[in-house]
Length: 263
Image (cartoon, rainbow, N blue to C red; front, side, top):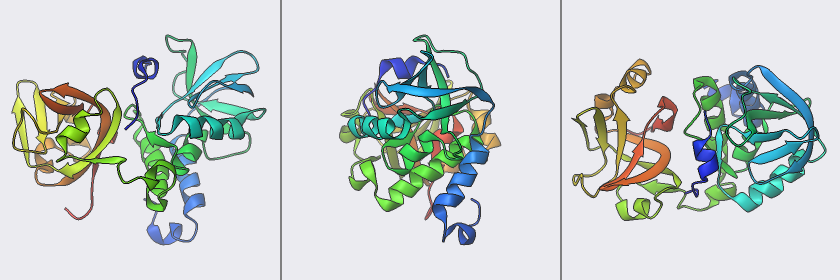
């Protein structure tokens, strides 16, 4: 679980296995370059690292790494400093409008590199893929980098408690206001008013549920993830934990939900 940084929270917004088996790092790097290669929004030299997710260019601009949530702030800040200080970077994104804190959200690429800084932090297990990525190709590429770290048990993935069990409501509730990844089997799908509930337990006042607003449902249906089709399937969801009777994560984008194998 990651502590909720209100400044971050408020800011706007498979290639074949046989080919990748012997060169998974290069394969993911190429996929990420294709998936997150947005238009260039600027360039510059990194003059300083502010914290685990933000840095400053030599012209004074502050940049926020988009698409990730930091899993280990101290280690991520140290890694970011080692990666970026004094190096030239290219900033890519769909919009270069600064957030309300004057930071430019962007995907940062070191000069001559195809893999983003975000991808490197994910691959080292020092970050998790954010719930706020609108571009599905970029989201899929970053998820592949995260999966590599999870398989290798790198960084934060060395701990078994990173992914929460959907049946452990108290454990999830302990993370109110934090970015959390939860995994389990959907026991039922119910609609109440304009909200669809993916219920992981039988007691709706206590057990964990993921919620989908009626206006978001068409996006899930277009991705062949109609809520009703998820009943009795094992899924993984990510987002900010809220307390609404039981613990809840609101699904605002398709990329927050993964259907797991072995269903």
